[in-house]
Image (tube, rainbow, N blue to C red; front, side):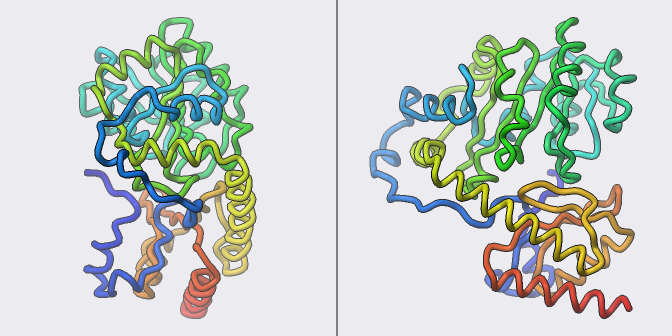
Length: 330
């Protein structure tokens, strides 16, 4: 299993700090969510109904004609490689490591390259995978550039897979309106923006034929009834979504300012996290962990990703820790 953020119990054991004493900034998941009603008992007692309102509300939220709910976009990441015979896959890197692992696991040939290398590499790949905004860099590619790449791939039956797990704070940049095009597959995560990662809900936006093939491969009832209920509710809550975007925008700007003031200016970021490239990544991560603050470290390039604190107590705690770190360095 690849390394991921959020392994709080392991950190608590390793650093001998009680679980409840941690500030977890390692995941890039919104640290605050929406007001939730009680889940009706039938959502637990009955098998999920695929013809409930979830797909209708989700299509309206994403502005698409067709989509497929999945158990988090991770389910689609793992299954899509099984729908193609072995071929050449290109991945714009660095990015979420599960993409490469999923295609490699079932025998596809893989090459990873930078964004600037895509025009030269495109004719040599059958599938191109892009995370937009990128994780961990936060780089946001314009839709026009992605659609150009898609057109070149689609001419010869190729796929462009765009993982938009962190797109909800900036929906105008999404390729969702174009997802009906053959060979374009857009993955969306419900848990990150809505602060509901435990619901394990995501969506695949694509043309109908591909969605049918993916649905057949995943089998019946991929989404639990309680998750379908919550997803329907929150995807339809436009007022709550507006408040969430405004709060995330404000807190993202606040985090960028705090990091800059503490001598750690972000190299990149988005509405849910900021990314700092530094040769001191390991030392910074260890120092913060000793203070009970968990961040995500990346080895290549050496860097640290900071999520957003949930409240003023968390902001104060992060500020104190970074101030102490800078004092130690000087």
